Image 1 (spheres, rainbow, N blue to C red):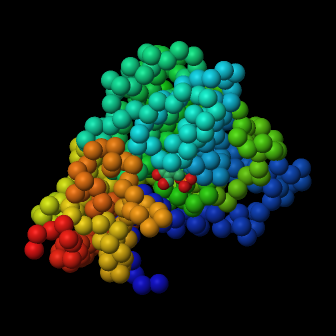
Image 2 (image 1 turned 45 degrees about the vertical axis):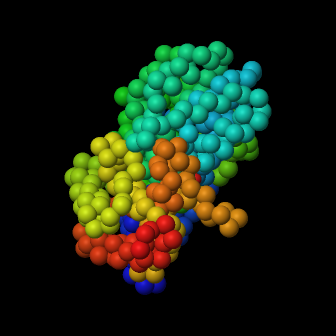
Image 3 (image 1 turned 30 degrees about the vertical axis):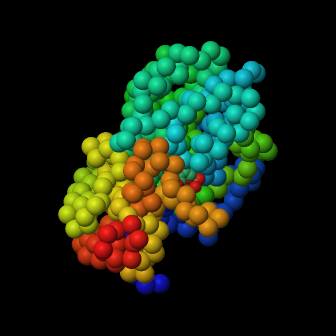
Length: 390
Ligand code: PLP
C-alpha cells in the first residue's frame, strides 16, 4: 500500500503495536473459553477479569462488575437505550440531542415507534448544547426518563457539559447515558465525578481493534439485556467473551492513561491548531465548524465554501491524505451532515465540510505536507465550481 497520511482517527485508529502484541498469545496459545470447567479454558478467565478491572479503573468505576464487554459501541448504545426503556413498564421519555451518532438516534427512533416520547435537544451555531431547552424538557415530562447525550461530537469534536447534564438529569429523576466514544482517550473520564449511570466506549477509537465496545453500568441501574443467550457478563450480555479483543482494549486503556498524562494531547492540539491556522490562512472563504475553545484536542472540522467536501476528499485521497466529511452520498444525492445542518452552517459551506482528526501517531511532517496539498486541491476545485465568480 502507498504511504498514507492518516487524518481520519475519529473514524478509526491504528491498533497500537503494544495492543497487537498483548493480544497475540490469546490467538496462538491461550485460546480457550473462559467459561470452561477445564483448566485450559479457565486460565483465560483471570486475564479477562484483570482486563475488566483495568477498564473499570480507566473509567473511574467503583467495581469491575460495572463493566460489560460488548461487540461494538453501536451495540453498547443500543443496549443502554433499549435496555433501560425495556425495564420500564410504561411509556417514558428519552431526551437526546440532535447531533448524536446514528448508534443513539437509531434506538431512540425505535422507541418513538413503540410509543415513547423522544425529545431531541438542539445546538447553537457553535455546536454547543442548549442547556435551557434541556432543563425545560426535564421539567415538562412526567414518568420515567432516560437522557442519552454524547460527551464529545464525532464530527466537530465539540464537548458537551456532560457533568452538568448528568447532574440536572439526576435531580429530575432521569437515568443518564452518555456516548463517550469520542471522548475516551482524548479527555480524562471519571464516573466518580460525573454522575452518569451508563457510558459507552469503543476500542477502535482508542488504538484497540474494531469489534469491541464497553458499556459501563453503574451499580443499581435498572436495565434489561439486549443480547439474550448464555450467562456471560453476569447474564447481562450473552455470547462467549472476545478474549483477545478484551485484552487488547485493556492494554489500550493503559496506554491512553499514560498518554493523557505525558503531554501527548497537548502535542496533538498544537498540531491540530497549526493545521487549522495554516488552512484558514491559505484557503480563502474557509470557516471552522464547532466551538474552537470547547473541542477535543484532535479534531478540526472546516468548511471550504462553494465546493463539495467529497471532491476535496477524493483528490486528497489521490495524494495519500485520508480525511472525511460528514456528508453521506445516498441514492445519487449528497446529503449534508445532520450535525452541520443542526448548527445552522450557511448553505454555501454545508457541503464543503471536511473533518481532519489526528492521533498520537500524527507527526508535524505529515501536517506540513497536508498544509501543502489542501490549498492546492481547494484552488483546483474552486476553479471548476459554478458557484465561484471567475
Ligand atoms: N458513537 C460515536 C460518537 C461514534 O463516533 C461511533 C463511531 O463512529 C459510534 C458510536 C459507533 O461505533 P462502532 O461503529 O464502533 O459501533
